[in-house]
Image 1 (cartoon, rainbow, N blue to C red):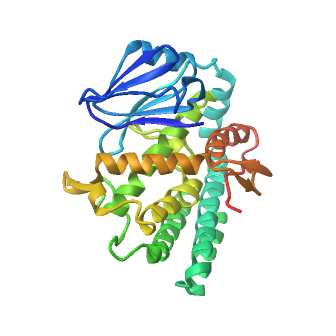
Image 2 (cartoon, rainbow, N blue to C red; image 1 turned 180 degrees about the vertical axis):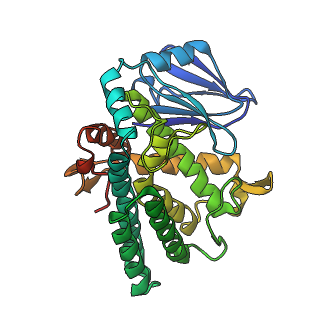
Length: 333
């Protein structure tokens, strides 16, 4: 099902019968019934500066369609979700898990192992066509995965995860076009267009996983790999890790290597580089296409989509509240 994204500042969104009307600042009106009927919408993303009427918001909530607001730099401002039934027993299990360092470590190990394995698989796919990497890159990632599996505590696990991330990005950046160098991962602010793309996609996935956790009665503040900390939702950050090399990095690479994103799609601001409005619109369009594309997943054992697997990540975590050792985060074929 489609995602509706409105990125034009001062655009006005209102309800008209069974459709949303988006009135642009120049007076042009778009009736979206033929393209995105309300009955088929799955998610809505609004940029800051978009005016949304109360009837439109209420109708979206009645239809259980989550609404996300993003700042110009991709930061999650907030979201609206329909009310969910009380899940007191699930919350109690989650609080018990949070109070057990051994159980949290068991889940955190699985997340890091899956992230490293998915990163290695992505590099193998890329290198099969380009032959830019030598065997040491994969050997080093294998060693970091073994370290993660045997980590005795969270600091050791985070050390293995950080070392694997450096190895992965050093190899992954070889496949970027020369006009878009990566350098190293930089955030707050992103230092170049590649980092800007990675950060914006991370914000989109973070928002989807936050909604998935809330809808299933989980407390998104309590993570295992990312320890609880005021000012962030740690559980969506946890669940996102295996999807970075499965969704965020491969889509970023595709957008640059296929020249879908150009230098004109970015702008300098606040000592960093950010996606401009047209760049955000282009990125969200391709993000949505990727999430809806069906594939046969060995992990799921059926045909599925990455959006379904994002939602399933919260389901799998909820099941692991009883048996943390059986937790199974998403893995690439």
